[in-house]
Length: 461
Image (cartoon, rainbow, N blue to C red; front, side, top):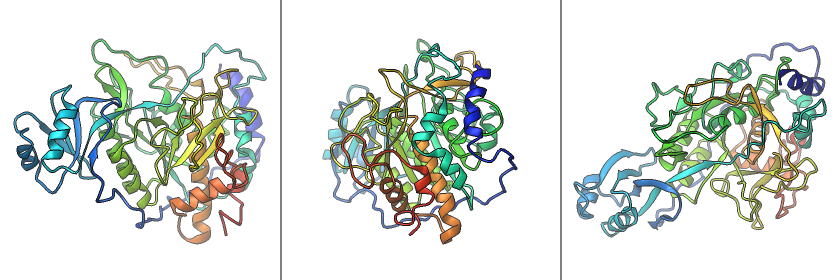
């Protein structure tokens, strides 16, 4: 596999100068805060969706000015409900008897709480392909035709960053020692309560008794991070969109909740706020779930801090974006196949949204692209090897996130500050392949990285 991957990387190498020198040491890009972005409206109240997948026996409560004990006392839940934590945004994280979530939520509302929802579960938006898919010198999984659709080679020739941008990848697991990724990784953070040692433990979570991983599940995070920041032009495996000039902040958010490998509202809420507080320029969310008040609030918090949020559109092939891609202010990333048409699995939106596309494969006929994977045996989980063929809107999103980070790095030295999230969304949508027009199937079209770095109307006015 290594020999074929090396051959397939050569066209990407020759797209830029063949004589390479180490990139200059640059300061981090500083996000520009947007305090006008509002959080939750004070009038918001009611119940969340208790039919959506959620953690059994857990509630998130937006109080009505009462102390936790006072609210539980008014609701008649003292001795029955347990306060697990207070989330960074102020919500109470409660444990109640499993199966009684809705009844206890209604009791809390009657007692004066503003809003109560379950602790939702989130799933990955990947569609891994068979690793035995035929391979040759003209392997259809090579990266170049995928990157060509977003004009990546032309963008590399124009990329002159004035600072080093950071993309926070909130995902499954990461191998910080992988030489194909390590030079472009920042120290990571384990946002899950999985019991691994220390906040920087990024290994796959150990399954509880009776549970196990599906093939490739834990490798997802390494694959997403690789499309942004795989070490490029080193004669080995794959290239990253950032050509060694973007750093990835790896944040582990997936773990086992019972027998399910998933993430939760509480974990994602804290992880998004953590990434924004660390000064991440972009957050990549290659995951999806139900409409979620608390996640919307944490995304608003990140946007106010100046952090751009990119999220996968979803792999249902239906009209309607998955959350969090559907939230205001988020750049939604859908997928097209190599002929430019929408991928058969990619969600779309007949209602105008901040939707752009990148090539992320197809189901029938099958298309996939190479990226990194976990090349380790953890005892309870065996990685897929050094590289793997991936498909899904999960792998469109990091391409869009990487282009957004490139724009930020090129904008800051010219204007003395980073563009706001609104400016980034305008630049990416208005320069995409649909020419500023919205199409229900493909949104604003395929991201055009070269235009993002050069446009003087929407990007560098």
